[in-house]
Length: 154
Image (cartoon, rainbow, N blue to C red; front, side, top):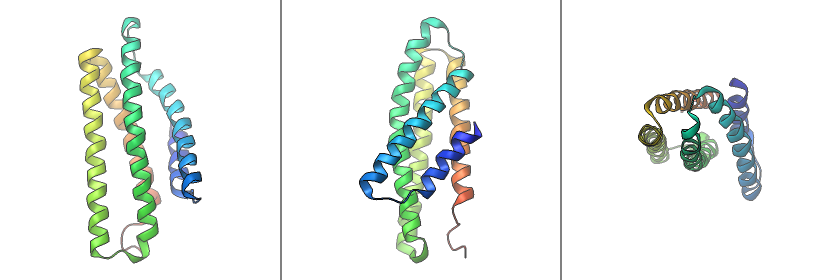
């Protein structure tokens, strides 16, 4: 699983092209990552046959929302990179607020869908979903943090 996450983080941090092309590149990276991620999730989660359709329908809803949050994350990383050398108090404060809001939204989304899976599928599947998504999210966050300079770092 490390390879897809590393590839995604690398792509997120190194793509520098025009806005439209950038957006298309992001869509492509998200699509590839999403397919690999779904296969990984499928290998981890055990679902009874009659619940499989319900779970994957909920999962697809989750993924659609997650991709939007991912685009927000990419935009924030791009803004951070563009302003890194010249961040004043106001810009740093704005970025900090945006980063905290994004993290809260991402965590809230995971909780929301875990509860939905618990209600509509079962608690074991919800717990597995929560664990694997939490793991993937943590790996992505760590990869990003390991590859960007800290504010004020020379």
